[in-house]
Every structure is written in structure tokens, then in C-alpha cells.
Image (cartoon, rainbow, N blue to C red):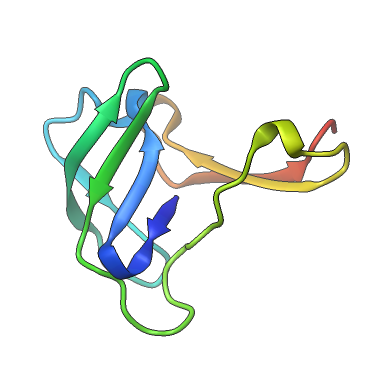
Length: 97
């Protein structure tokens, strides 16, 4: 997920990128770009990546951070990943369905 578009920060799962010799990020409507691993936490399975800043109103795939403990049954959720190295996979659904 793009966490801070103006600074080009992306938060993702560490297990997705930890064994990649090079990390590439593709956002909707933008060419792929190389990302740098700024920091990571193995206990939380989080990695912080850096790409070029995203400028322009409404650009990028910026999502708000939330707390899973506050989700209610039936609320919409969206998630993306790279299962078995097939990147670009995303799904939408509702909590508890």
C-alpha cells in the first residue's frame, strides 16, 4: 500500500520482498520503478519501501492505515499481494464473508 505518496513511501509485507534481489513497484497508470528497502521488522512482517514521490491530486493507490481490531462484520476491505511470485493480484471483499 502507498503510505505517504508525497514522500514515495510504501508499506508492504516483508515476506513478499525479503528474498528479492531487486524490488520493483507498479502502481496503476504508472511505469514500474525500482524501490529501495528503507527498513523492516521481521516480527511484524513489515517492510518500508521508498520510490520516487507521487505528485498530483488523486494519483497513486493511496490507502488509509487502519486497525484490524476495529473492523466490523460486513465492512469492505481490499488486499493485494504476490502469491507464488504472481504479482498484481488483488481482491476486494467484506469482513466475515
